[in-house]
Amino acid sequence: MQTFQHYIDGKFVDPRGGEWFETINPFTAKPWAKIARGNADDVDMAVKAAHRVSSQGPWASSTASERGALLHRIGDLVAREAERLATIEVRDNGKLMAEMLAQLRYIPNWYYYYGGLADKVQGAVMPLDKRGYLNYTRYEPLGVVAVITPWNSPLMLTTWKLAPALAAGNSVVIKPSEFTSASVLEFVKLIEEAGAPAGLVNVVTGFGNEVGKPLVEHPDVAKVAFTGSDATGKRIYAAAAQTMKHVTMELGGKSPNIIFADADMEEAVNGAISGIFAATGQTCLAGSRLLVEDSVHDAFLDRLIEKVRTARMGDPANMDTQVGPITTQPQYAKVLNYIDIAKKEGATLVIGGEPGRRPECGDGWFVEPTIFKDVENRMRIAQEEVFGPVLSVIRFKDEKDAVRIANETIYGLAAGVWTRDIGRAIRMTEALKAGTVWVNTYRATSFMSPFGGYRQSGIGRENGAEMIKEYLQMKSVWMNF
Ligand code: NAD
Image 1: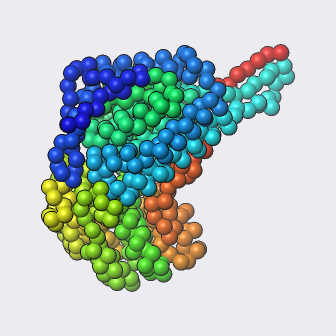
Image 2: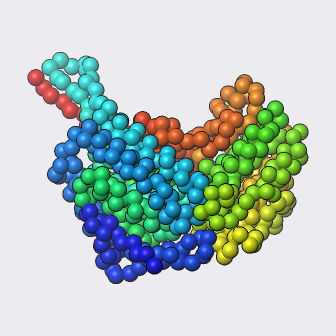
Image 3: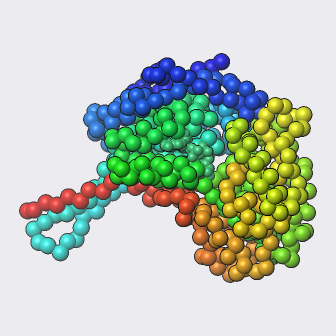
């Protein structure tokens, strides 16, 4: 069995407490590697190393162009190692190889983009209402950034934080999910190869309470960049407040994907399917509530079911597999439990609703792609994040009704609208309370485009040029002459 140690101050090291835990391949449901089980001492070592790097020595005095060049080298190395990194994440997470390869070929863009931005952050000279003074602003790094990520997309979600954090001149301690720690530990080898100083990027693996909590509470951490569940996000936000840390929170969602009768039906069916079933439904932006206009509801559902019926489940390492396993055993149990809840609430199961027991599923944690109709928006299945391949179909009468239903949620991460009426499209983009609204598409994201949530889906944004400032603080300098 492979072993993965912490990566602290440029070295792979055993956990201080001498404890390890196993990480499981969700396709075989068997352990495949041993991971260091961190504690507060490991966290302290990593934060001290990161703090040293961001406060003294060559990184603290690096020029923006030098940081940009480092990020470019990291991007090149990720591109070179895309297949190897993809293989690890497929094994540890159960993500489809085809999805993972596409993701890893795209990830270098974050390093190129923020590398290019590093030397384009500028302060300003103020015109002022006083004579004899010069006043200007400059942007400075925050210091040590804690990057805490969930299990559903380890490398991608680490990258969204790491690239702008480094471009801005910070140092980083990464705490990956206890369910998927391996890929990021392979990835940091590339950062070392790219020429990063020891201690610039550290990885401490382990559990939320044992590693995440002391990391968030550490006085030398200046910012917490978090992606995960809203429950954990609220705990971290409260803990970070004690030392007034900056936070970015990318949390859960229950996003509406809205089909109007005038939509291109073929495209909308495909958009509804990829909206919910990509990554086996384990994406924060999943279009898990499908709102369908009354007049096309039944016909649309028939087409949807027809396509879902032929979805190929099985080994995520096969390039033609369309539905992989659920990443973790607790999540598998949670998804099946929500299916029971939906049935008890009176939703009608139209397809799926069972564990995946096809021969090609082996011992893996599979759930058949599942669709419920007759869902009412007040039901738990329509209000709570399932984070699995379960779609709730809700009817609506007209545009006003669609907006009301779509916005009746505590979340606001994303929304999709399918219509050929340009006026309606514009009205909907204005009325929907969501950080991202897609029209006649779903799921598009880019390193250039801000992503984040309204309401309880989060605080702050990731991606896009402005977001480098989420990792900087502004200083105002006054001079008397
Ligand atoms: P989670 O909240 O259980 O865990 C996320 C991370 O937080 C893990 O690394 C965990 O160990 C750590 N953690 C747990 N308790 C902690 C504590 N007290 N202090 C510090 N760290 C702690 O989330 P998960 O189950 O791994 O991931 C699924 C969730 O992530 C879903 O809700 C999903 O919507 C969300 N998500 C959001 C986005 C987004 O961009 N908005 C993207 C992907 C996933």
